[in-house]
Length: 215
Image (tube, rainbow, N blue to C red):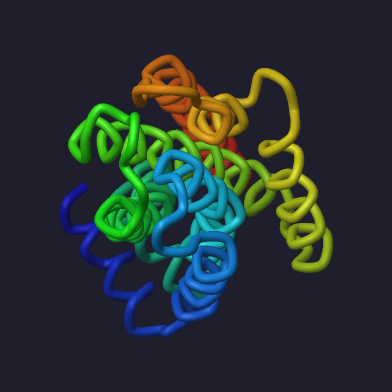
């Protein structure tokens, strides 16, 4: 699995397709967050921006290989493992970008009443993980092998990302709301993060099994 992760990460970075979702995320954070704003609300906004970005990154990683190269990778590592490595790569890099953003927001935001920087940062990192994994689940379900047509896939990605941010019960919405609507000390959204892990694991399992069977 390590070799597959390195392979997909190298493809992702060398293709420079990561620049578009990264620039989108940077723009969302730059527009939505200002230095000196209440830090919990800013962390919630930064985390929310990861949902479409993570879904986009996962779709990139699932579609970046030519069909012939994908067949070779599947033969060498197994179709399910190869698909899982692409999913993990696509969701992993947004988590890293979100963690960097959470650190920057915590360092420049207003920490009054939050219980201190470490508490705020911990809440922000959990919300970041919840949103990135929720977006990753969306990306897994709107890409191959479920949706192969690019137009339908992108449309489903946008609709799924929006739904993940506004639907009651969504881990991403719960995590963002816990920060944006917080009053007083920071309360890390542990439940939302745990739910996002379960959701992402279920989506990855379904995608890997379908990929091994259909491709």
